[in-house]
Image (cartoon, rainbow, N blue to C red; front, side, top):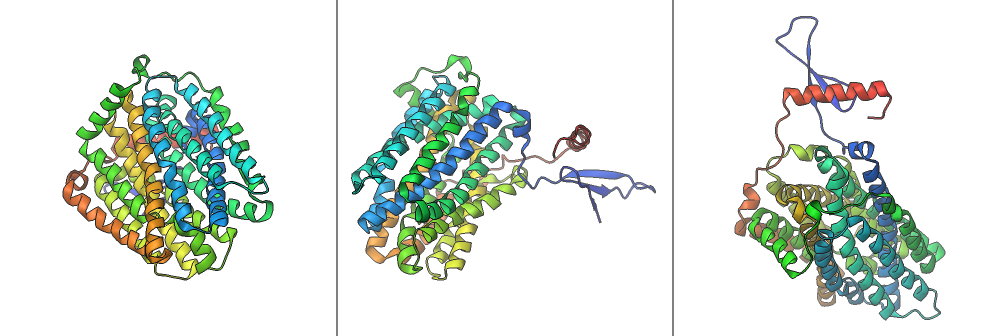
Length: 458
């Protein structure tokens, strides 16, 4: 039996070797996400807050773009194509942005990208206000926004280790993941309601306004890469690719995510499913976009245990199998609430996989390459869904929306098996957490008591 300590997630376990009164050992139970970086670093708190607000605004625009494109063209293929046209600028922005992040002041990059993305979304607002909005404007502004977003991410991720201590890096990564999960729940759900009640132009303008909050990066210190930075250019980019090629486990985490997003990301058919299968409108579209995010949010809040997993490669593979399997079932179940629940399960599996993949990234990439490899990582994370939009749109044109969903989910599961066969390092990875020592337990108890005495929240 054990008694649960109400402080800081600690459990007291009786030591059977001690006589009465019983002495207690303390075991750390790491279940919920660690918010220590928000308490320890004011600069990280500013970065995280701005990212949270602007990410929610970006999700409003994501839903509005998909809904407006389907409303103007009545074509799922065009919705898929909208995501695909942003792929090239996103890849170029993330790869070149990675070299810039390792060469320039990362604070300057973050400031410029926020301004640029605000201008792109402003173009969408102006177009939506016209009596006859132009479809080509949607594609141009979406592509421009994707390119600047690609430049923003590597600078943001490379700045993270410069704002928190080494001990807080993993927790900070998890908090950033939680931010994305939260935005994918709140943004689409609210976006669907706002589109139905206010229209498209106000929704785009709200997103523009959120970038004002993200300009809190102006309050950050200068974030110059170690050693003054690496000169940007093709040679710098090639150095990052050489490192990636030599790290087969890291490469495998990129490939397995591409597999999941290309074949198992059905968002391009969400408008068609909402209108034709479920008989709804913008509100239902928002719920479909929000459901994976809801599951991801719940999953991200209980990721404290992930640092204890040694075989992180196997955990990544298992998560992707769950993702693909639930998407496949979603494609054959026409009941709306069951479909939303399945999307939520898929989202939870995806965010847990993301935590493991980012942990592998952090331990496999040295500081002077963080910007370039973060750019490559973002190209995979954000580019995969855009390829998935195209794949889903083509599959839907061939066999219908439901076929596009279940066939993609099955292909995702098959892809995991092929990758485990071709890259055995993924299954063999054992570079995860370590057992908690007595010193660790004592330090955790002392910290919890100290925080209680100071009146700080745990």
